[in-house]
Image (cartoon, rainbow, N blue to C red):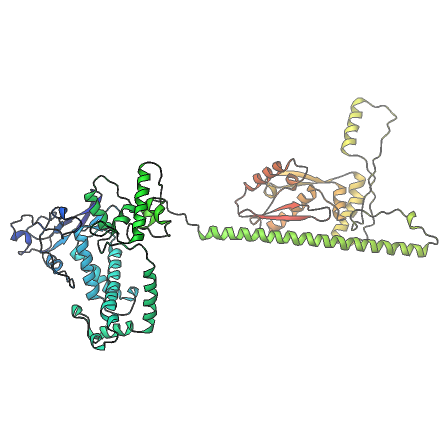
Length: 599
C-alpha cells in the first residue's frame, strides 16, 4: 500500500512515498551495503557541469532490510555511446524493488534525472510493445496502453493523475519512432529494395511482416502527399528551439539552480531555449527577437513599460498568443493556468434558447404590427369608398322620387365612423331655476349637474343593424331601461385579472359606442378583459396569459414615465412565464393588442 504526500521545497513538488514491505528479499541493495546510503551520480549536463555532484535521484525502497519510509540514492554506471536505449538499469532496479521518485515543478511538469529516465523508459516501451502499424494512436488497443502504464508505474514513483500524461508521452514517442524509421531507413533507399527488405540492424525486434507492411505504407502515393504537406508546415516554423528532450521544464529547473533569487519568466526561457552550448543564437531572426526581449525587459525593470496578465514581455515581442496554447512554457500548460485567468462563463443551452425565442418573438411582433397597419389603412380606404358610393346612391334615389330635389337641402348625418347606425347626438340643456330653493338644495343640484348633465340621446335604427342578436338585445335594453331610468352597469373586477381588485361601471353611451364600432374607453376594455379572463379560467389557461389594466396605460394616466412604472409594477407580481395583453390605439380607426413575453 502506497501513501503519497506532497511536500513543496524550493519551488518543486517532491513526492515522499511511504511503502509497506510485502516480500522478504535477501538480495536487497541495503543488505549488500550494510544499510548505508548509496550515492548515484546524475548524468552530466554540458550546460551545468559544476552542479553534477549535487544532482542525485531519490528512491523509495520496499526491501526487507530497509525501513518502509526510507529514501535512498544509488549509483549506476552511465551508458556510453549512442545507440538504441534499452534502459537495463530500470529493469535492474525493478528487481531490487527500488523506484526512483519523479519530481515535479510548481506547474506539475516533471523535472530531474528520474523524470528523464522515465521518459527514456517510456520510449523503450513505445518502440517495443506497440506494433509498427500504419494507424493512429487512438486505434491502438487499450490493453497495450494499459501495459505501458503499468510498467511505468511499477518502475517509478509518480504523482497522482499523471496516467494521461504518461500515455500522451508514449503516443508522441511512438509517432517519432515511426518518423525516424521513415526518414533514415526508408525514404533514402526508395530505389534500393535490398535494404528495404529487412528491418534495420539497430531495431532487430521489429517483425518482418510488420516491417514490410510499414514500408509499403510509406512508399504509397497517399503518404507521399501527406509527407509533403507536413514538410511545408515544418518549413514555416521560424523560431526553432534547441532543447532536445530536456524541455522547458528541465530548462527552468536548471536556471533555478544557477539564477538564485531571480524570477524566471517565459521570455527568458524562450530566449535561452534557442541558444547553443556557447550561449550564442545562430539564427538571425531569433537573435533579432532575443535582442528585442532584452530591451523590453530593461524597460520593464526601469518602469517605462508595464506588463499585466497575458500581455507580458514575450507577447510584446512575438505578438498575441493563439487560443489554447502558450509559447515558452512547453506543452500541456494553458494561458488560463499560467496567468491565473478566470474560468470563462458558459452560457447554458436554455439561456441561448430563451434569447433566440425572445429575438424571434420581437421580429414576429414587428411583422404583425406592420401587417395590421397595412390592413387598417386598406380597410379605411375601402370603407370610405363604400360610404361615398352608398351616399351617392341614396341621393340619386331621392332625386328620382322628389322632383326638383336639391341635395344641399339634406343635412348630412354621417358620423366619423360610417359603420355606426346608432350615433348619438348630445346637447346640453341649461336649467333655468325660477324658484328659489334652499342653499343646500342648490349645491346638490349643481353637483348633480356637473356629474350627470342631462343629455338628449338620439338612438338610431338598430333593427336592421348587422350585429349578433345579443348585441341588439343589449342596445334595446339601453334604450328601454338604462336611458329612461338614468342607470349604469356596475362590475367588480377580481384581483387576479389586473393584480388588484376594483369596481368599474359602464354608461349607456359606452355601450352604444361599442355597438356602433366607435372609439371606446378604458372601462369598456377593462370589462372585455374581465370577460376574456373568465373564458380562460374555464379552460385552465390563466397561468399562460396575463392582463395589464387599460386605465393605467391610457393617455390620461399621467406621464409616460408614470405609465412605465405602473407596467413594471404589474409585471413584478407575476412568475415571469406569462404572455401579457396590453391595449394600444395606433389611430382613430382601429384598436389592437400588444403581446409581450417578458420571460
